[in-house]
Image (tube, rainbow, N blue to C red):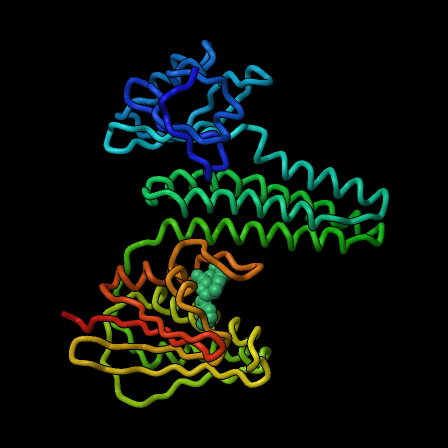
Length: 368
Ligand SMILES: Nc1ncnc2c1ncn2[C@@H]1O[C@H](COP(=O)(O)OP(=O)(O)OP(=O)(O)O)[C@@H](O)[C@H]1O
Ligand SMILES: [Mg+2]
């Protein structure tokens, strides 16, 4: 029998949208693959977990995660972490993450590492890719859904859970390291630790992006802040043959802003500028110029580079969370920056031409 509910392609986990009577309204393709077709979500819950499910999937319950035994197509019963989020107390988003899935990737890293010690053949790269895939899949969930904040919340609690096994593997590898040193194979551990740190960083950035706090404002000397930021970026700029200049053209008023957040925005913009120079024809004579412009009601801080620039289609997409054209990029920098600036009542303008470079202008309101 064909059911009337819609299928959602892009969500990489079993995902359901149900109403308050547990009737299934929408499912992801992964749900179709893994679960038998039923009308009510409760029909997928094993009798042993059903009471728990009914209690838990109630709009007054504030927790958003529960373990449930679900009936799957192929292996009958499996234990899932079930994450839920109500939308207006009418529709419930339900994400099901197989209990073993997140730990499995980690287990196989350890297993592989042990094996590689035996046969001298290291290919942790694959594992890293697998971890990155998991994280990217989570990111896809966030990008493609209209209701970004709801899904963001769920995705970040999934990320929280993923983070824990990574941290414990890190500990495990550190414990293992002395033995590896003895065997003369400690570089294995170094590579593995690096990769775990990279995966961890992705997760932290992901969490940061979905949980930006409101600005904690204080009186800030912008000129000094800009000088700090430039000083902080100088070494990195030098290593990519780039000169970074702040043109102190005018006296600026003290501003009421969140120092850390605005600093982070400027560092993100400079980082992007340097990355764009690195892959451009100007990679041996890069320039990043920072200017300020005071208008009656605003202060504008521009960051200009002579890097690869962007075409119009790219410019349209750069503030979308997780949009990136870089192999190791996470695509969070600008989404995060924009959110910070908007929380300050400002905006970010972009001017860019392919092969000519880009200028990002942060416009902040002066105090009301
Ligand atoms: N100065 C720039 N010149 C050219 N392209 C840029 C510039 N700044 C941003 N972009 C484009 O915008 C995309 C998104 O930038 P964003 O900073 O959000 O993510 P990212 O740099 O790819 O990754 P990360 O999360 O590590 O910052 C980049 O991948 C790049 O394509
Ligand atoms: Mg960036």
